[in-house]
Image (cartoon, rainbow, N blue to C red; front, top):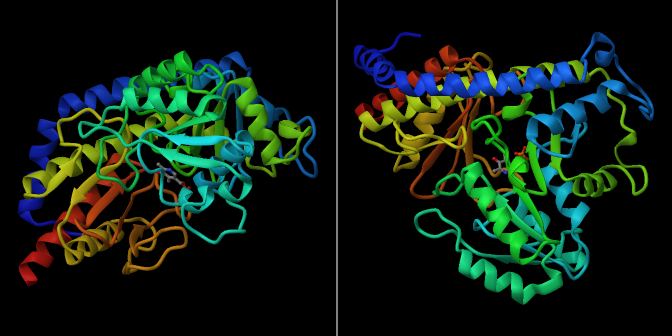
Length: 421
Ligand SMILES: *Cc1c(COP(=O)(O)O)cnc(C)c1O
């Protein structure tokens, strides 16, 4: 792959400008790696824990110790980490159905949750399919302020109005598919204190997707009751083949475990099927891999900003997740961006991405992914719903070097598209 003089020059300029940001990212990765390795040492990780379990998976030490390590790293009392959780949406569904009961309110305080949760909640989809609404769980929402802060007054009023029905306050850390700012762990900690001050029994539940290891603390360390994510994003380190996790208070994780398997059985079963080593190795890599993705995102922000696009976050802003948005302004440029990312991928580089009606999403979506693990978005990947302002959501990069190649390819593809039109 050959890049134009202009693109190469921009990249060189970017890396000089970004040096201090890269140094900060390295410091965070070091601190998080220390935390992970301290937990490995504390729990005496050894080869026997990588053995494969079958059947019910009783007494699988590797599985049980990984849960304990995960809890320590997340700053939580307990955790549930399973390769059998098929996606982030599945992990979130386990958490929601594990906690909510008929008559309860699920109260989202950072606006609309991720697109795939709409049908789970019952905002869209077919009545009778088994959404939370079908089971008599109500949904309420408060948006964030324009500046991305919580509307604390409204939250207080609503919590008091719901009274005992206020079972869950739900908050999505990352911007997801919305053009908003990502919340910091500190913001979420303040929210958890605020909610518990008014309504101590309310579970504060966090969709933590894309946020893990970007900061040196996770929301469970600052009072969130249940924090949920996917292993084919940050915390799987690009190693886990599939899976999800839920971490938080003992009670919240126990309730989730009853929904994952059966009431009364919970986390004591589940065959590891040879996946333990990959999940341990993934957690070991996760702080470093997340740093690679962050550096790639900073580079993308710099380059696309210099090319005249609106980007969020800006190149010199501190980040709270690994997502970078580029507002491309047109269907043609969004598609050109994704084609470039695809060409710059290690796998399926010869494929041309096309928009499609993806299950669970309301607009057509275009996706670029050339990943070793299907659908993995800690690996270089980009996607965007085909609706104005045609925002490309970009994330990942297993190594900074490969992420950089993807970004440069995307920039080149967009410049060529503009030249052609
Ligand atoms: C990716 C993501 C999800 C859903 O995860 P899937 O693995 O795609 O089901 C939920 N919330 C946010 C914020 C995400 O980024």
